[in-house]
Length: 355
Image (cartoon, rainbow, N blue to C red):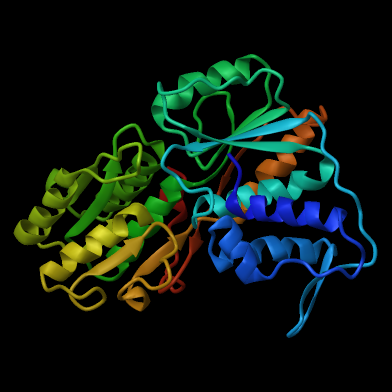
């Protein structure tokens, strides 16, 4: 599998190499129609080529081949990028990570193979590849990951904290839960709900552990009534019981603060909150453990904890180079999440962070 923007970029590189200096390249509209992609996708490809100084743009005239062209060649060195089936490599979560990996390896003669993964549904041949990046695996994938690592294939898990010997670079999800809970308590809330606890997902379970630690130490009562669990299928769709649980929690137990464990749940949360005639920031405070997407209703009223996705991708890529070159054997890094919108005034407890 290849990113749509990478398809456009590869096509333009072929056009450049078969053209003369100064030749005009297809317009954005033509590329959008040819590849059936959005203008944003085309602009990403063009931006890359501009940065690589392979093309130049003349306002009102178009895009042209520059006078000096460096030929691009490929080799047999392959890096596999595994990501969850149902995920979109160009979404707000995967794209920043994958883009950093491509940027770090693109000029070093490596080819990338992007592969969606659903446990038990397919087999992937990892033999002969130079390295593997496995993005956001579920707990049930860990045995396969250990098996690959034990074969001596360089492998780095991205955005999951591994408790065994496997290499990883990840957001500190425990700290994200800690930060969200402390923020809500600092606002005076004593009825706080956790939304999005997913079975076999170490990311949400670690957030929940950090959240619970803060709640317990603040002498706020923890109850299963204030926890909304979820099941996510291979298409990243949320089960219907999630919506029922959340609606019942809001109706019966009336939490005044919600910690939402991922952007995936935010749209459903806001729809149900609206049905209950609640306004975020006025009737109920919401903290999201992701950046709030553009166009989200009440965006200005939702606090967020931002994952350092670009930094994760950059560190993982640099570490993989060192592992492949024999300069490093292990990489086990947890990066602190970033206090986002409405959270800058909160100072977090070092004691709780150490737990």
